Length: 243
Image: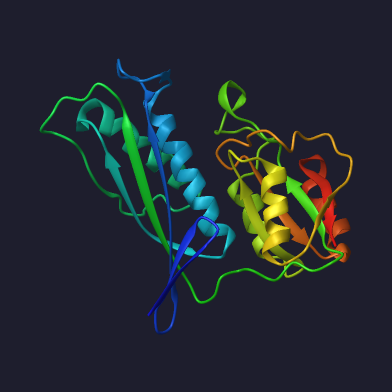
């Protein structure tokens, strides 16, 4: 059995399939008195679940399991966090996925802490090598903080967008963008394949944070651009190419 890491995913090679895992965590954000940033508790788990789900679905994985760790009591903190997870699973179309987890019932906590671990399975990672001449597109506009509304925001990438990209054979590689920003992920995509990313003028902020996977970049064959542009319309931005 071989285990390795690809970007933010851990991959375990089993005899006939791959087990792929992703995780995320948060601390000091929530509604407890010791939290440094006050936000409704459920958004912590919504954002964390979204990040992991996007990472796994982008590589073609089928989601099979989810566990969470809650550094606090079940009521009200744990219940709100689990409700957020369930809400995001429903957006992803897998609302019937069992949720396993643990809470802290022995000690009173004054700060919110949360962790999530999601598993998927796939025969092979959906990673087609990016090639010189590939166009790099971005789906969605980067948002974070107060500008971010996950439910119903038409400007950020959603699960249907991700499915459209994964089902297109002319799309080589798909990468969700988070706190490191679009430019970082595009440059990293190129470097993994010993390529160079060259930017073109565009209207997106490609340097700052893209929040919890509010955008997705993809390297595509140039021939695929007209069809994808017609489908995504204003949601698609060409940000560069590979050489």
